[in-house]
Image: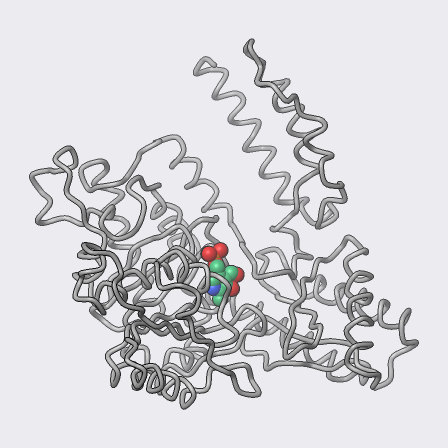
Length: 473
Ligand SMILES: Cc1ncc(COP(=O)(O)O)c(C=O)c1O
């Protein structure tokens, strides 16, 4: 491709993306294709001869695009958001153009120093304690793995890295913790049997007294507690584990406390939501995902630690070919996590934070929370619905409940859920809360306005009408 061709096609693709972002709400949120339909349309062998970009792009539109799920759709109410934004997309374009591999300071000083600066901006935006230092990881799953590995090393005086794990170490998390905790416990060598699931209260938050009991029981049996994971904004219901009492327990027993705030951490940008961080000075590490609710393209997970030395001691490695003359005075982020090679992720955060300003991001988060609150009020006013969890952020958990038995209610709500998503205009996902089939509606797309939440309510009401008859307040 010549530079002129690149320029021409580049302009065309920017036009395409711009139009897509404007029109994304016109498409069905989810693709209706069946498994295998895309593969069937793709050649099984790679092309031997070069193909033109015109042909490639035509196939993108014809074959690939119909198989896309539209995460930036205003009717996206599923999982948690992964919202992007124009400044973030432009920064990703620059990152791709620069093509830098930012494993150490020397391989791109600007990437390393910008990462240091934007991580500290994020720390200030969330009002995390001074002394916490941040690093960008790919995902919250990786960040939690990094925390578990560091906790493992601290608990064994950094001997596990040398001799392997010689004794079982225990990890604690609530029954509502994200599945990545279990995955990470397995990968980090603790073993699934060493993960203690602590029961939760009526609001799905970890019960600190039961955490302490579990720790003491393990100690009595000669086992070594190493790490606890608290969640701010659980995936199923948005529950908030109380950091203050959990932090005291972990300090008393000298256990690493990691906080998974993947989705809800962004809410701490708002002074009225900062209560979720009460006790955060007692934690050892903290992760939240700007790639979820902070307008920054996937992937971008901000991981903070109090004891930077422990983190680096866990991961550092010094092969001759990576040594430079400035290693003593710079951050070489290859030693702050698992991977060696690193993308220049700080650039998109820098673009986003500067374009929106802290106030602009706060306004968007506040709007989403208010819209979720409004939706909750509509549900509350209709006696066919039951709300199943507190709404601390922008996630509302609900189901239909006409008094039939629990097994029948689960079946009813499964059918109800299918009907809602069949509309194609909105997409909701579900969970199970204490065995109850629960629909989740999360407001978090950058493009979602009140009219979209109203439309969602209409679709949901009509699905309820079809199954139970008209609404009663
Ligand atoms: C609470 C929580 N933790 C962790 C994750 C995993 O996030 P990631 O995809 O960044 O690994 C999620 C995903 O939704 C989550 O809700």
